[in-house]
Length: 309
Ligand code: ZN
Image (cartoon, rainbow, N blue to C red; front, side, top):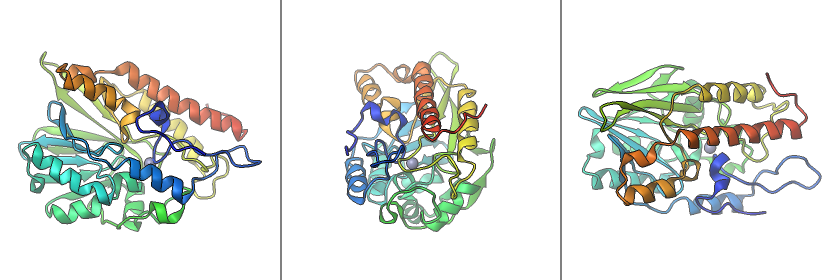
């Protein structure tokens, strides 16, 4: 059994978790133990300095779980809140960047797992004017505090303070604020309501970059694609999600975990003064999708399920 190291290529297809042990006598990876999940989560909670990424997009997450702040003259949008334990880092980071947490208007999420929405309740309480936004399927999980989730992880590792969702988004819905528009693309599979968000960011040459905030599309260890009683349509959903993600225009992409978008390398290039151009990586986006889809197809083969067309 091994625990994934921080910021390694394992994270290319990692979502809530990465590599699992292979169960004795079983073709599929076994679910992770409490100790392994906790060790993995703890490694993700260390602080990193907040920073500007591109235009009005900032990183305010921890080392292993991302949070993004999108600022506008009329208030701000926060995408993902990490764990409850790392939510204070977000508030501190927003202040360090010169913005006011009280100006956050919307709290969005990539998907309703504890490492990305565990801080929702705390942040909603800290920022009284903020609305929590989610897809209908993820809203059910958020409002259950994680109990209404199909993930085969030990219960004690996946539960968080339930939070009421104020606004439900359907596929193609937009969150508009202060001249910024974020579009929701429902990309289910990693969770039933996983949501990829897209926006445009102006660049120095007077054009716009297409920016994608990936939802994750990995299959957590122990999750069955074939006849999964908790999520019977998971295989078809993932097939549709990969097709949908491939069709998105993308110059710059971000993800719920830094390793999924080569955060260490890209931040090092920002530190060297290369500017937001260092984040332009359409090839990396294609590779991330190809790796995630390969993992999916490999599991279909392992479970001897014919690939959806
Ligand atoms: Zn996840």
